[in-house]
Image (cartoon, rainbow over all chains, first blue to last red; front, top):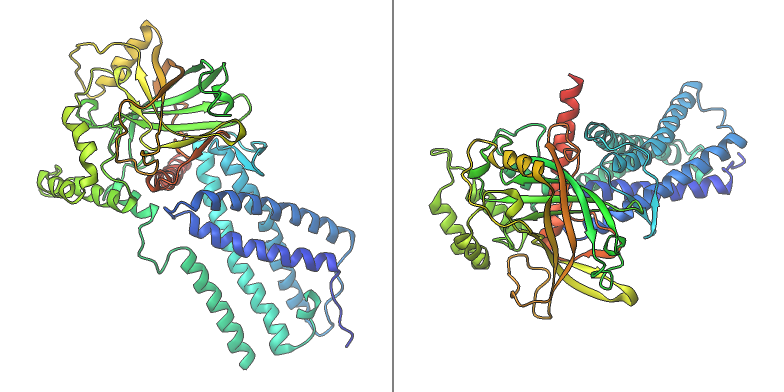
Length: 173
Length: 333
């Protein structure tokens, strides 16, 4: 079997996004209820890293649109391919929706989003308590959904790598 | 089989790590716990969990330029900055009688020309009875109404103060304070200290206060909303003004301890006049959606390491999230 791997650009974006997202969800869960003084720095870092994920995902989607991924090995059933594809689509949607909802909810609360010190991002949602309520809950719900999908994704990848040993995991390594 | 075990262990470990990050296995004090205690058994849904009753105001800060040398914040240049604000009384009950409240507050949200915002939530008490969140949490329990009498127990409050000698300055203030007949004739304090950042890295520790321009008037107030009514009547006559004073810390003043009063001879800088021109009820008012988070600061003002300041920010965010969701659910009914 000839090992098929994804283009280096896709692999780099995948692993960078993975590191950022796994850290962002952990930080988000920890900081929302923390009373500690690091919380304010955590929020700042969370906004910056979240923006990076959004930019990386846009780049990634445009790369994928330009060049389709190499096909999966023939033994992977149509059903499995469909499920894998669906999980990927959902992950991509969340990778866009989570940073956008975070950014928008700050606007709804009237909080300027400052990144890199002086640079303030434009406000993308009008100030509204009700809108904040919706966006804040969406942000948290989306993040937990993404975490669960990532766990499913990791379980699937490890199943290919450790049990089937069919080269599917190697595509991303 | 071995592979499946490894996969199960990996996913299980991951779940445990994130549950731990969310504080599932932790007994440390959290913002949720503080707000749980503030809102009590039967929360007033849709309202702020503390200082639930208030009135929206709007006006303009007329800076005289005196503070520009101390802080690069553009609001301190000689110019005018609009704000939306809120007078409130302490407590969780949005229909409490105005005159029964022990605490009155004024919170402001300055909207600077460059898009920056600055929020400050000030109280009539210049200091707090505590200097750390854990003691504040104890204070909430000590001052909560007794289930039997429906009123706070003086014995428990006495015992709390005895356990917390850092409350001496607060008690001293409480013993000599007499509330005035108007929101407009109280002095409001930042309570926590902040750092002003000026040119060339110049750093100045400060607290600030709003000092009323109008003299205290003898008046007999009546009714549940006596202070709100008085404010509307007063604003019909003209704006309500406060002098915006900054108190400069000296080396021996602990910037991180909101329970200690600073000596009155500390240098004071008057930054300008805060002028309130209008008021409106908080329901649907411009201030209702605003979370007066004291850590929403412009460049040129920075937080100190005061743990109460940071805990306030976190607890306010929890209160905002709860009432925002409740307001959303109410509207989609």
